[in-house]
Length: 549
Image 1 (cartoon, rainbow, N blue to C red):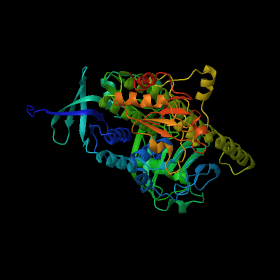
Image 2 (image 1 turned 90 degrees about the vertical axis):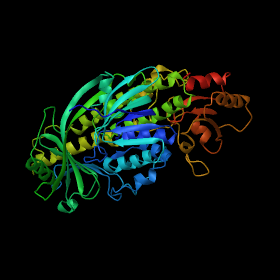
Image 3 (image 1 turned 120 degrees about the vertical axis):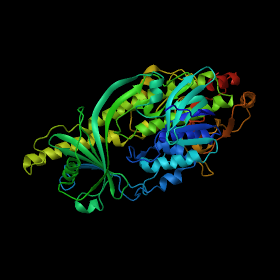
Image 4 (image 1 turned 45 degrees about the horizontal axis):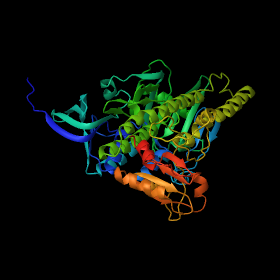
């Protein structure tokens, strides 16, 4: 039978392929900025297996900007459940250690952010992002639409898309295309972009099961994550995926592929409990844990983001949150170019800035996996003897210390720095000092060094400094209000380029010390683009650099 159905032609500014959290965040940010975009997603948008459950600190700061914090906080997750991470032989066995954390309701933001991390699994978070994206009239979200291929030229990209519900073919013409279509990204393959890294780490099996009142079946005080250690080492984790009656059990596995029957999966759950108990298996997902980063983040007018650009072990909850950072970076840069004030180097900075972040993230995540597997073999672990007790004490103490590196990652979320970016005006610096600052630390120290996230502080009107950022560039003046003609010159230069620029004066309290210089120029993504105690002699030249001209 010959296919005679005509191809429909559709135009937009940005085509986003993939409606997972990264694609939805990008579409929502573009819509928030008034830009037109179409999102195509092969699936129906329903999440059957929540791959993530932590919305990190930096992602929550973006949610604050987008006005959706209250929806994340109102998700169905049990906000009263303690968030302890517990290491044990079985729920009815011996507890080896725990790292206590308050429930979401009791937790509070750290001093360096207006927000805190939230527990909101993907099956709850994606619908919030869908609603956010659809709230903008410029965003067209199309489910059950398969991306087939693309061709690009100097003016734009033409993508072939199949409406799988009707069989209709579409040709989508866009100024730019972003592939946020996951680890097996068709866009990445179309662009012939390779990935590098350690590759396969483990074959892991996730099982979502329902078990009502599971906490009443054992003596271990409740927590969020249970990590099970046997004589052979760490073999599984159990997560309170909704905080009520649904649980995600992950069989960590090895580099060898594995398949299990339903009875075998139930036997794993019974081993974790320490005795048989009734459970209903809802979904099973076998997946490959990998460490890979794309060698390029795009070609021409096409870009990749999220899992399409970096694959990481979920140990630490950094994967999705890093992808949201990609989306937030691309969103304002694409908008700036589409609005006409962003220069040609602006989009080129996307890879320069975000790829090193991903390389750091995947390395940290793999190290976290190694920490989780660090107990190794301990043949006396389950013995009710002096040797067994000594083994459990030794393993528990060492394991508890090793796992702290995964639980305290705020500085990984907010302490990164963009180096070597063409759109950041750097200061002369000591290379050894830069190397020391790039090292991973658990404690976040706010800084206005160019390339870092601008510090948060509460303003007298109850807003955060971050609430002022987002729409355009902001020049922060922490001085005494004395006139400076170069500020006016900077504002005139911005108007000439039709570049959004706002000047704020924050001289109260500790703000001058926190911001470290009298003048700090902050980008729409809260990143410091330049700082100094005096404005440069040629303010227009500074603006030209930071917007990519």
